[in-house]
Length: 45
Image (cartoon, rainbow, N blue to C red; front, side, top):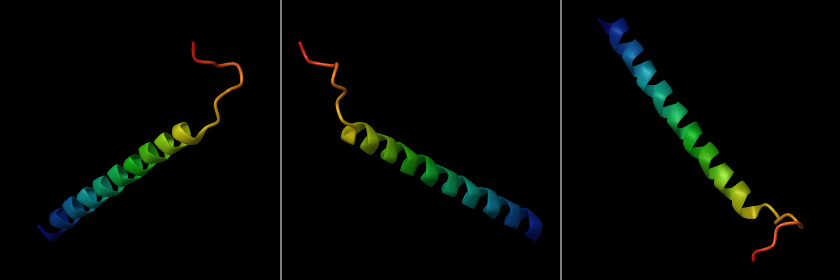
């Protein structure tokens, strides 16, 4: 029974780490998009 609890806790911990990595990656993508220079050929008309 203890092994089952340990496996469940490890799975929950892994899920939390995975979700945090995904959130950090999404935030980094937003920052990259916001701070990229505008290409010379694109002008607003």
